[in-house]
Structures are given as structure tokens and as C-alpha cells.
Image (cartoon, rainbow, N blue to C red; front, top):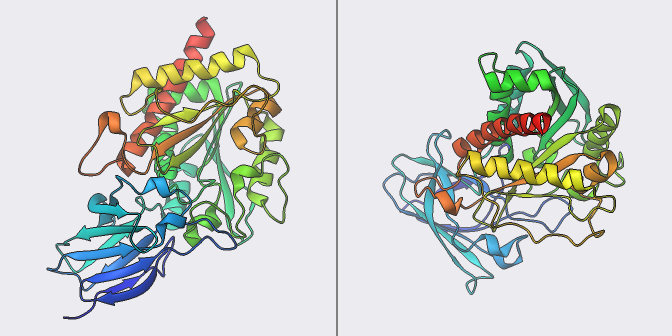
Length: 380
């Protein structure tokens, strides 16, 4: 019986082959460069037709979020367009924690990943498409350490300064799928929601804040192993040029409303995290955050407010994190949106779990909730 072939030598690829025998393989995830973080995987299997693959990823007890593996199913695609779920089980007692993926492909090729990848090639397609829309302008805020552009798309001419940014943690690829949905709505001349938002707001959108980590197949860090969402108090050109460029651009415009888009490895739900622990918290600021969460929960069953992160005690907010820094620095209503790697259990989908399609739809729903939020504040 011939052995399957496994490779991750492509954009966002990440896996190491420990051994392979027939249709079975033992694998390990490569750590982020100059970092101990690891959890993201993305690889291709060939020579698989007519055989059940048994793929074991070992050593996961030492991963960034070990609680992300129980009740998790890997994503799989044979055409790289539709991503479904492959039956997966986690055994923490085997080989330092092992995720076993079982899947029988129809054809000879199958791609597996921690979540549906959003390639840098697709990122450039998205930027090109939106930048070419009427009323949209593009600017590069700067360059990363690998020399990639930090793309920003600007639109609208209203007084409210809105910043949307995603993929500070590059392995959280659902964040750029969210961006695709949000940008499609914002740039669509036929969308009444997009039209009204462009009237009321000036929007600045950074679809991928960490292109180096995205291309390198990192979970959480940039080219030199830095977690960008711990750099917002004192970003530097040598360690975190991405944050420095984005924050400098924010300083030039100010920020009234901001959303930092992420994914959470362990919690099977969509939720928000706020800035309740910042030193200068204002009552109207917190009220604005609560109003937005309530409106989004009312709009879509793919969002809820019962499950999430513990609240931070007053005055203990971490100002190295963007949501806290923007709320403190600008008085903004800022928030972190978290989507699951598993599924949104209150409205679960057995076939796909949380998916690119649902991420994009949530992006549209978040923009519609933003318009409701503006109307509510105008009429209060």
C-alpha cells in the first residue's frame, strides 16, 4: 500500500510529518517563528482516493489553547471553496495530547486546516475589488517586517470616525472572512445600509493587520514572534510596525467606534469583549458598548451575550490591548468581536460548524447593527 503524501509548503501552510504509513500519518504543528505559540495547521494530503485517512496531530497539550481541542472537528475541503468538518477526537493522554482526524475523500486530494484559510492571494483580490468601487480609496499604512503592505480601505464622509481591523492574530482566519462580508456591504451601491453608513461615518478598514503571520502560517504572532495585541501601548518599528502604522493613522483621524475582529479557540459561541476596566471609563462610553451588543443580539441568532470572557475589574484594563487602548486614548466605543473555531452552539451547524459563510454574514449583520446603533443614539 502506497503512503499518502503530505505537504504544507504554501501560503499559510503549517505541519510537520513525523511518520506516514499507508493512509495514516503522525503529525506535529510548527511553532510560530521566535515564539512558543502553536495551534494553527493547514496542509494538503494526496494519494488519498478510496481510503479513509487517519491523521494524528500530536503534542497538543503544549499548544496555545489546549481547551480548544475537545469537541473540535478539523475543517476539510476537496475543492478549496467549500469547507466542511471532518470527524475528529482528542485524547490528552496519547503522545502529549493527540487530535485524530478521520476522513475518506472522494478524490485524490484533500486540504485540512484549523479553520478555513484566507490566503494572502485572496486578500489581494479583496483589496483590489473594494478599492475599485465608487467612493472607496486605498492607502498602505506602512510595511511589515517581511515587506508586505498594511492595507487600509477608506470610504464615507460622515463625521463619525469608524475603524474596523482584523487578523492581529493571523491564525484567526474567520476574521478576514468577516471582513469580506462587511466590505461587500459597505462598498455596494445597492446596499441601503452601506449607503447610510457612508453618509453618517468615515470608515477606515484594515482587513489584515498581520499579513506576515498569515503567510507564514502562524497562530498568533508576526514575523518576529510578537503578539500584536499586546503592543498597543508602546508599539515600535522594530517589533510591531503593524500596530505602530495603524495607531499613527488612528491618531490622525481620531476614533469614535472601533471593532477588532478575532476568533476564540475554546468557547463555542460568538461574543464581544469590551473595555470596562480602563482607568477613565465614562458611563456614556459603557452605555454605547452595551447598546451595540443588545442590538446585535436582537439582529442575529449567531450572536449572544450570555457566554464570554470574565469582566475586568475597574482600573485593571490592559492598555497594551487595542480595545482598551482605543477606549482610553480616544474615548471610543471599542470592542473585540470573537468568533469560534468550533461552532456557535446556540445555532449549531453539524455539516460546517462555524464557517466562512457565517463569518461573512456576521460581518454584514455587524454593519447593520452599527447603523441601528447610530440611529438609536441620534434619537435618544
